[in-house]
Image (cartoon, rainbow, N blue to C red; front, side, top):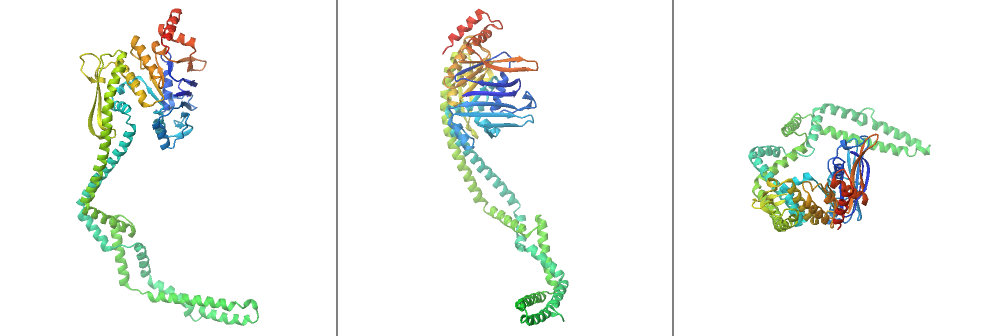
Length: 555
């Protein structure tokens, strides 16, 4: 149930802290006093769009915080566990903040959450039924939700939705593959031509870089040989080369070794240098022998590179590695065309299997919906009859339809409110008062199925009076035996039946107009209902009528 509501810096509310009671909570107030402001704040808790225009002080953020107490339903607990939302067994704190920079933040138990998570959690905590929602009764989607609530189809629908999405995915893959195969088949000859070119070229990893280096070398072989020969002259072939000089140095250091003990290692070290230089000279000589200014070899390298460049340009790539990947891709496309019949048969089989699985689950949903429709129609007649709708007739048709995200059914509610009146959709022949009474009856029926801790009725009794108003109040009171009910009302017959009464009022100070709410004490409640009975004048007659009405409404 909704235990506390705190609102700050929102519309005409500077700061408000309210504690609510279990059972039937009544909210009254003059038109324009600010009852809609409270609902607007609660709607933000449910995930409605935030607007900085609602900030009382545009330089400060607005905060709306609601505390709900247990019990919780299993679907809510499972959702929180699956989405890593922190949860407490005894309390849930839901908060929404609207900053002056238009940024909106949402929290559950002080942990930040997305607006989607807030909406999904809040719908398990409170349901706000306002007058404009009466129009939902004509919506096939809303009608289906009612039937599914009574049928207890929540888990089954979740299972079905997974199956339906798998079917849609398999079907989409089948169609996309078939389209790709058809396109590839139309281009088959050209694809084979491109593949043949790449197969003839047979590009190798790293080949382009290697050939470009080879071309550079062959194009400059004379200059390279000159550098090699100059190096050899310096090391071993010249009249005064490094090897000769090191030989001389070795002889001198051998003479020193007999005189300076510190010089004993020098001959050995010079010998190591001589061996390394000799090895370098041999390596340079092998380079020189391998190099030749062969124009045929250079031409072959150039031709190979030009062929690689040509195919790279055709395929808009820059490396032989990319050409290799394209070759694999083209080969795969041709292979797919050759095996297209088997591929499509396998994908079609997969899609048919997924459809059959979803269809079987949809059949079970349909069966439960048909049972629920019969049960609901009977309960609706029974519940609405005391509200002056003794001639009401109801027909709920569950008709087969193509598979969709909600199953394989369409639903249509038809009503007749008078004798000899044909059954017709609710928006075709129902008055506003009749729709209000129907919606209250429906909410009364599904309250026990929805596992909601709190339901709020916003002037659901509009357009009725007298005995019908009294009966609507009794109906809401009966619902409050199972869940917390809050009713915003202008009718004294309804207000008298609550076990807690709150008044919304507006007042002015020197700076601004404010909206506030207070819980009425017993004497204040008598006066409030007296005003609702008689208008602005509260005399002893009005008070006596108020006291009498309150006594009659005691549970």
